[in-house]
Structure formats: C-alpha cells, structure tokens
Length: 403
Image 1 (cartoon, rainbow, N blue to C red):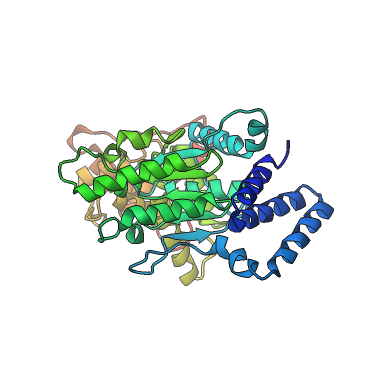
Image 2: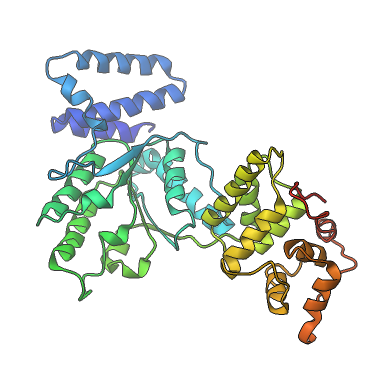
C-alpha cells in the first residue's frame, strides 16, 4: 500500500493527541501525492491542514516541527537543519561502496511496501573512515535522495558541562526527530559513544553512552538514523549493534579520483590524459584534498584571466601534499627527482619532471640515472591516452598545459 508510512504516523499522532506529529506527516503526504501526480488529493489534504491552522490552538503547534530544540543553559540549537532535493548533492564513490549506498536508499524508499508485508525495517547506517573522505557529504546525499531534511546534531551544544544536561539534550533531539520526517545525522559519533571501559573517561560521559543507546532503542523503525566517526575503534560495541548498515569510506581509487578532478574543476578540467596523470599522482589523497587543490587552481585561473587551469600547478600541489610541504622543487637532487617520478611512474615522464623542477630533460635524465637508478623510458605505448600524456607539457609558462 502506498503512503502507509505517512498514514501510520498520522494515525499514531492523532491517537496520542500529538498535533505536531500529525501536521508534519500530513505535509509529507501532501508532497508525495503531488509528486505522484495526485494533485486533487494533495489539494484536499492541504486545504484541511490550512483550516486546522486557523483554529484557536493550532497556530503555535503548526510551526513546531521546524523549531529545533535548544540547550536550556546556553540556548544554542542542538542541531542544524538543511533541506536538500534529489540531485542537489553529487558524490563520487568506489563501486562497492556505491552499491551499498544505493541498497540502503532503495531499502528506505521501499518502507511502505515492507511495512505492508509486515517486514521490519531498521533504516540506520554508520559511516566511518579518515577525515576528508566524504562522510558528511554522503549523509547529505542520502538525505537529498530521500527528499528529507537533514538534521545534523551539534556536539558542541549537545554536550553540556552541567550534570545530566547532555542526556536531557539527547532526549530532546531524538524526540524532535521522531515527530517529523527527517534524517537524523550524528556526526562525530565518538564524542557521544566512547567505550564505557575507557579508564580515562569520567562517569558522566559513560552515562551519556547509556542515554544514547536508550534513545536509539526508543526510535521506531521508520526514523532514518545516520552516524559518522573518524575513530571507529573508540566506539562502544553496543553502539555498533544499533546500526543495520556499516560503511567504511577510504581515500578514492584512481577512477574515482579522475571523476573527482573532472567534477571539482567544473568545466575547466584539462584533457583526459592530463586528468589521468593528476589522478595517478594523487594516490592516497582524499576527496577533500582533491577539492582543495582543484579550487585553488580555479581561483588562480580566474585571477590570471585564463579559461583553463594550469595542470602543472595542480601537479606541484599534489607533489607537496604527498611528499611534504618542505619538498624542494627548485633543486634537482637525485633523491627528490626519483621520489617525484615514483608518485606516478606510468605517467611522470622526463618532460613532466623537467617542467616540475624548472629544469632541462638532460639534467633530469642524469639525476634519474644517478646511483644506478635508471629512468623508465617508454618510447612506444599501445594506450592512446598514455602516449599523449608522455608528450609532456609545453614550454614552462603560466598557461594551461595541453597535449
């Protein structure tokens, strides 16, 4: 049965006398009806909702779903809200992770059919991985695909210095999420859910973990819950068991890195062979790193009044990120030359190395050969892109490098 989720929530709110909940889910049902082309039914429900809003007791309640709870001491909001639509957020993931995310989204979207067939659902996911791999962006993407507002918990206001206030804040936030259609996102989950046997933690913080577990357990099986952490090893095992889906995000693979460069350079990307060179050299960099170097290149191209980005400058920034900011590209010592070459040995040719070090190809060749380490020469290649890439950059200028 279509719309069973909304109807069940509306009935539940009506039985309990919860106008806030009824209003929130009637609004969602109206939106879904319009999207399905059932305009007449949507208009009728919307009219009923407006008539209710004109009653003596409804006006204050009608706006309650969008009023985020606040910490009683600081008066700071316990969460931030963001409204996204399908297509507003684009993510680039490696294929296995993309399949997991698609399965989760399809699972949540099929909630009506699953409930109609008496199949229990648990729309919860924990996302873990190092900083910069896109955990928050993935949460935004999921909320956008589901067409639900994203409610992101604020750890700085949730965690209070007053005894017992943190648990109370958690309760208010979870109550808010239960009473409206939304995705509740607990970012930096480790700040709330550390191991309870950690001898360095205070008793109050251990009680916070218990409160968090109780609030998660009190959620019905229709509230979408996402959690994210950079330090999965710090999480209490009981927290892991509360999430049906677990996704680990790692630095992107070479194909994903190429797609990220194309995306972040936003129409200013160089030729495909040069993008492949950048993607190969950017191994181990996160999506956040690629975004940062891409935006830096775009700013430089705008200030220099150039249409395209300077591939050589992006490559220099990648070298600095991977080898360290103190790497000296002004001196062609053999160790540094070989280290730069080894970042992308299939693409980092003498011409690219000469441009990077502002030197000549013969000089680079001698440095590569120093100590018995010979540069790998590729005078022929079956792959068209690699052959083009091996032509290297033109004379060292500030203009866009092309093949």
